[in-house]
Image 1 (cartoon, rainbow, N blue to C red):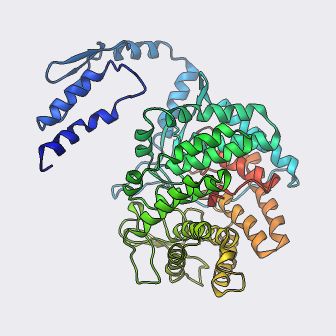
Image 2: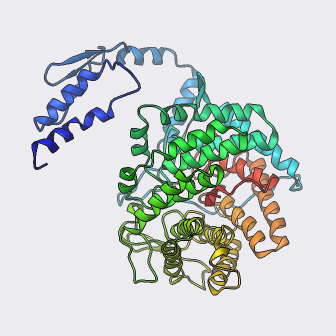
Image 3: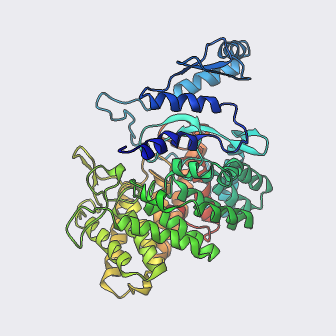
Length: 535
């Protein structure tokens, strides 16, 4: 800060973090105390007595509150404990210690091989079976909801993106593991099964989010989200767009358009994640879906801005074989869908199809060349490259063959025929990759968990898409059989297979019950979009 104007602007930045929904904020004096401490190059410090109701700062300033003191609150909670509540608190403690870290910073969590068990009575994979289980899942999700006013919230395991570190928290607002993803499943169930209670709960799940996105704090919420298609603002755009379609609600589509307007040039320029999950590549796919549904030019303009932002970032590798290394990737570009070249290739191919821009098509082709350069014929897979130099060969949506295969199929299906006809060598490369993934997925079946991100459901979705693009009817039958295997195992054990915890703590779309339910609904209605490629 080289001058007084910049100093003053930086000092007043705190005001942007205030709650602007209120005309009068009783805690505004705390902002003044915090600003004063920072101008004195001190760390702001506030305190409150355990038996008091005032918040004080180091300079003697205080703000009274109407809150019950911490000591009174603790006494009341302790006196109200019964056997059921004690058991619940013990379960919360147990869930919060499942993914502790080793001394080297890596999670202790392991995924041992767990075979799928068959129930004593075999059940045919029919639509009636799948719709019944989807309905049961919707009711279970509803039973765990915390309802207050017009809204709904849940407590569950938050896996911090596609990492292996989890914590038990009120679930967030995003598509990946939060209420937006759960609302997408509930809205799809409402449309498929004509279930009004699922429609009501889907709207309740997003009521608080929608209100905030149209409020005075919307810009601050956007900055906290980031851009991404799974965990960022793009995920909200995608969720609201799908919900609007499923429920026939133009208000949801209007909120998606309003959210798209929060993708300001400054917000896009601040993106350092870059990838599908948390960065600009995911925003591209979400905004293009909104553009297709609304035909408003603004989402396309914002998607193009995200693509141009990515093109301005450095790309490791020689010309013709390059990809991006976002913050989640460290210094090296990665393979795969979630943080790697497959996701970037899919995003740029989609953007090229929507705009006919050659620079976007070339960026996509370079990502494919980068990725295919490390393909292993022995593994029928692409390596996962870890920051410490370790190489593994997972077959999941997030990392490895399944996600790469889904990206390749999406590129074939979504408009690439304009520039890459099926007879062209480029399309033949994509089809060869799909065939290799099919063999890899078969080798890795069933995998240790039943999720879209990291387990059996992502592989099932790949087979479903491959059946269409390869025109192989036997693969469609395989999808039904393997879906039934997952369902029968849950019937036998009482739980789906998770990294940790039971059904009631694994509720989200990419790594929980909502994802199981949505996968089953797609076995009933093939027109439901494939969320793993932001279809």
